[in-house]
Image (cartoon, rainbow, N blue to C red; front, side, top):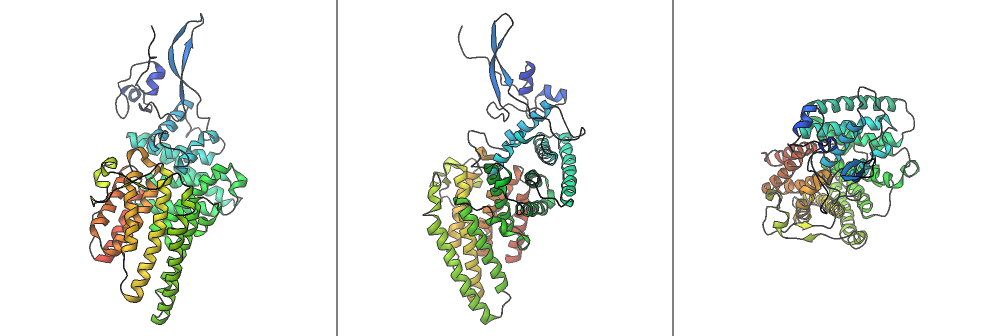
Length: 481
C-alpha cells in the first residue's frame, strides 16, 4: 500500500539506534542514561546533513527509508585528551550550529559573515590545531551552557585555555601570520562574547586588536578563498567599529582596519565613512582642551566637515550604494513583530521596519549608526561653543535604529544579529543620555537585557557602561540590565 514514508520525531541518536525516543527536553532520557550529548529534535536544521535512503537487503527486497549520515566531521588536530570520536565531533558541531544560528531557510553567508565562517569549518577541520581548539572550545561552552551540561562546558574552558597558550607561543615566534591564526583569533573573540563574565569587553577587545594586527600583515586575497577573506574582513570591521564607538576603549582602537581591503560594496562605503566620523570624534576631544577663541574657530571648521560627511551619508550613499541592496526599510504593523512587545519602540504611534533580508537590515543599522555618530559630534560641538544645540536630527536617526530593532532580534534570527544590534542600540542610547530621555534610555537597557538572555554576555557590559554614563550626566542611575 502506498503512502508517506516512515518518519520519526526522535533525536538523531535514537533514530540511528532505531529505538523509541521519549522526546525529553532539553535532552532525551536515553541520551542522558548513556551520558552522551542529545542533538535535539529539529528536523530541518542539521548542519552536517542526513539524507533518507532506502535499505536494500541481500535478496533485493527494499525496506522502509532510514536516515543515513552523509559524512562525519574529519579528525581534528588535537591531543588525545581533548579529542573525541567522529560521532561526538559531528554531533557537537551540528548541535552548536543549530542552536547558535537561525534556521538555514532564513540565513546565508550574506546575512551573517560569522555563519559563513563557521559553516566552512568542516572543510578545514584537522588542518590547524589552533583553529580546531578554538572552534571546539566555543561549541563545547555554548552547547554545554544551553543544555546545562557542566562537564561539557568545563571541557570547553580547558580547550580554550590550551588554545590561548598555543596562540601566545605562535605569536612569540614572530613568524608571518597565517589565515588559520586570524580565524582562530576571531573564534576566541566570539568565545569571550558569550563566556567572558565581568571581563568580557576587555577580553574581546584584546582579541580584536590582535586580529587587526594580523590582518595588517598580509593580504587576505592572496592567502585564502576570496569569499572567506571577505567574510573575515567584514567580521573584523564590525568588531573594530563597535569597540571604537560603543566602549571605553575608543582611544585604544586601531582604526586602520576599517579601510583595509576596501571594495565598492554598500557596507564598505559605510565603514569608510565611519572611519572619517571617528576622526571627527577624536578631533572634538582635542578641541575641548583649547582656549575659548581658538576653540570656536576649530569647532566651526569641525562642524563644516560634519555637514559634508552627513550629506555624503544621507544623500550620496542613499542615492548610490544603497540602491545595490535588495530592499529598503518597509514600515509594518506593530503586531507583525510583537513576538516580545517590550522590545517594540515605546511610542505606539511608531511603526517598526521590516526587511527582505537580515543583510539589508544590518547594513541600514550601520548607516543609521554612522549618521547618529556624526550628528552627535555636531550636537556636542555646538553645545561646547554656544551652550545649546537642537537634538532633533540625532534623535530622528536614533529613532530609525529603534524601528529596526524588533525585526533584527526576532527569534528566527537568533544570534546572527546580536552584535550589530548591540552596536546600534548603544549609539541610540548615547543620544538619549545626551538629551536626558530616561524612558527611551531604559528601553535601550531592556534591549541589552534581551540580547544578554540569549547568551551574548557583552551586552551586559555595554549596558553597564551606559548606566555609568547616564549617572555621570544626570546624577542618578537608570534601570540595570
